[in-house]
Length: 167
Image (cartoon, rainbow, N blue to C red):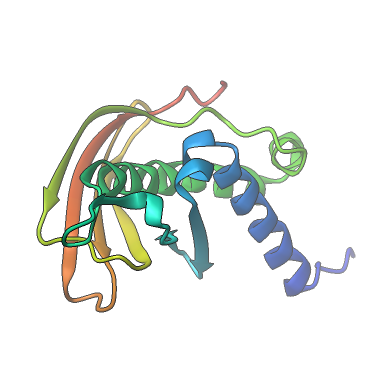
């Protein structure tokens, strides 16, 4: 009987895959978005930089940076769900992920952002919740906050075209 892998090895493999998936997107790298995984929750982090300021008089984060951050969080939530299944399934799929070959990202059909208040000049966090995910289509809701999870500064809803399973 084969002995199971230590938990640290499995966690390390998952973390490596998550970071590689995030770094595969040039725009994610450009904005400085990183991800943390706690259990089954994925948190996107928009690391503060002066170049993200849209209105220097307030100062406030640029609306385009906020919208892109929320869209990235939604796409990564969907993509990570696919990658997780591939890794857990073992076999050729898991080997592809370990080699850094990821399925295509979901394509945005539409994305609506609600700007609830100014984004302050500091780190921002976002979590996405998949409302519906099928073979061809997914609906996602994203919430963003800074200091207090109960005080959202933006939220969004998006619809995505899912990549074919054999792509």
